[in-house]
Length: 113
Length: 113
Figure 1: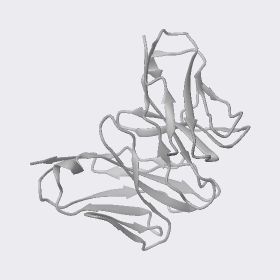
Figure 2 (figure 1 turned 135 degrees about the vertical axis):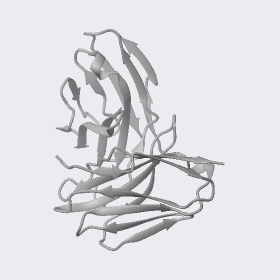
Figure 3 (figure 1 turned 90 degrees about the vertical axis):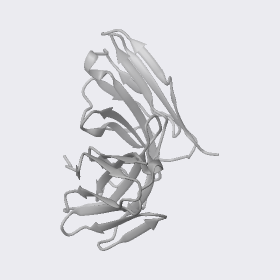
């Protein structure tokens, strides 16, 4: 069965360190997204990609970057982790074209100390 | 930035009660409206994807309606059960950015036996 997986599931890091969260999907979806879960805000969009070598900033992109070198993966990098980036991060993917549901990974809980 | 609002923020009902939530979104350049169900410690799962004004969708005891002209959607749960307890998210997308979903803050439903 096709799926979307995130790793690691939990991560503790120190302020100032660079951290990369992995997202891998086997749906062969063109669209991939990274969201963070914030109390009172639901899911907020960090970065998204509509295909290989395409990346776009979302609402809360400062301090984050992504790259899309193939269809399956969209890693999210925190350039210099800050305590404000402590959150649960969700990766999602969807098909290009007519409106389609998005499929979400299990989430990565990141704590910056 | 697309602004999607949900109300109420939380709802506590008794088993057997029927309930409804509201999602409001900008009606200009509307493309699609999504509803997701999000249980604690799990990933959001799609309930409905709606595009047409006046559209109504149903899945078991859950149904949703869409008014694209005035920019709102209702989600109804008939005869709530404890297993319906979850956060219900709506998300909207705009034309030419069809894959990109902007989420509301969610409505947290708690159903007591």
